[in-house]
Length: 454
Image 1 (cartoon, rainbow, N blue to C red):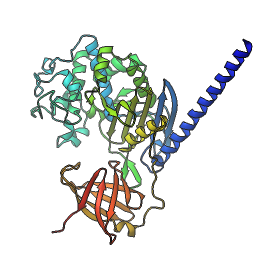
Image 2 (image 1 turned 180 degrees about the horizontal axis):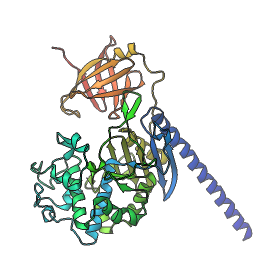
Image 3 (image 1 turned 90 degrees about the vertical axis):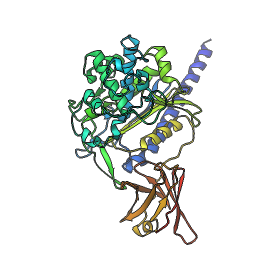
Image 4 (image 1 turned 135 degrees about the horizontal axis):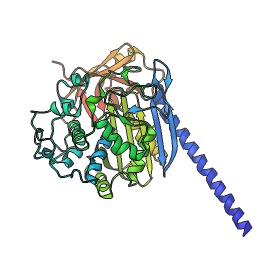
């Protein structure tokens, strides 16, 4: 019996040692994968991976304050942009659990002055199928961001605008206005400012001590990351300052990566809301709702739950893969679309699935080579901007893509005639004819033909 126990102990020790070696190997691989994004100025922030209830990777990159050279740490708090919707939804679901409101209540019972109030339900708001006009699309939205707001003032901005479609009939785009409305309903039902209500209903019960809602009264200490924006192909600049109160309900939450991971544990573990409401959130038949996106993902061979967000100076991503019990959190203080790609690749790496490391061209192409890339290209009606004509323009040692509205995307060279759009993080490829002149432009899965000259 003693020999059996000794043998069993030795086997367990070897298994534990093997497991730790695998964790260290995966951690090294994750770090190696992230580094090119950091060196190129396309990611700074915190990455956290949890598997089977244990943190297997947590690392900080770059600076929370570039001017003062203050590094990001696990204690750094980041604005999480649209991921904030998870917590507005959670507060509303708490009120549903306690009987204060019902999912099928019409919002006219709470806010009769809103367009279509007697046709829009709480459920429609949560699932972003309300038909409300999007505050972010208003022509004066940039001015709205430059002034202190409240849920009431934000909701007033869409007063008088007609509904875009019949409530509950479809999902059109992310409904920022719907979550402004939900924030106002939370205030009315709790008799508390929204920031205080979220603390009481969501953050404190779960133990999220480093999280809060930025209502413009937050002291921006060294633990609050400053936001940065890409400038040109390789540089960064401070992001335009905004009043985060202008994003109340849809993008005003700040937190640490560990707090987001704690939330995922609590929510998917079944402790944050009642089982019936949790099932409604996880219902895969609706791709969007309650602050989550859901899809049957071929890469991970199951339904996964994720959310991303971008706001001036910040980008965020969270992914939960149920069968693997895998959580990936990225909170960053560079405005970039790369966070989603990084997060999905880290999940694949952690599960032993294929992923594509990022490689930048070194040395970078000289200006004369970039000049040969210039041209105008027209895309078809199914492109992101239907029938758009875009131009590739070389300037010094940078190549930019100019869109029809005059905005530009810097293109990062990855190999000969291959680039990455730094603004939208999409692959770009130039096709050439037999003479070496550009004959077409591949952008993501779309192909643009050389535009005819008049």
